[in-house]
Length: 217
Image 1 (cartoon, rainbow, N blue to C red):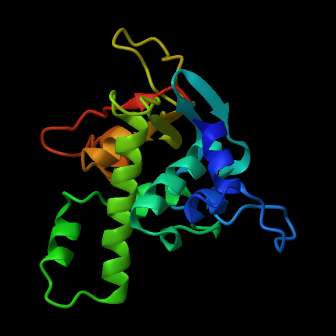
Image 2 (image 1 turned 180 degrees about the vertical axis):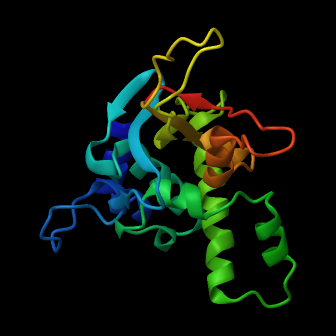
């Protein structure tokens, strides 16, 4: 499929595929027009990416759109117009999974009911529909049936004095813990912050809320 997408991009069969896979001759860094970059912020650091059982370590919390993510942009751009996506910091596929909610979300529905949505609101809805379309094509069993992608973030650390039920020191004491945020979460209407809060839990709540969703970093 990737090879076919690259072939299509060179045959003029779709501007979005061209933007995803053909290097921009005017770009000094040799990037394509869909080469977005994610830079970790907000106290959570991207540690690795899981795709179909394969794990990719992310150095320094910075990730540039790879072939998988540029394919997603190409498919979404084909559906809603190639200008829906771009390159540079803050314009990665992961940024959009975090910043844009799916077409069933309250935000999307509220915008869609406006008599005259603003240009920014129209852009939001179009990008949301583009992303939904891309994931449908990539992951549905009767289409490409590609594995879904998960992003593993560092969310915090276990207490230094953590102990087991029997009072013995817990081997996790002082170690960092991570949580995952995936395309499947996006499709289900679950955001990155919701995943982080679930993984943190709340020991001061009444009754205390146990952390859920923590994974190995």
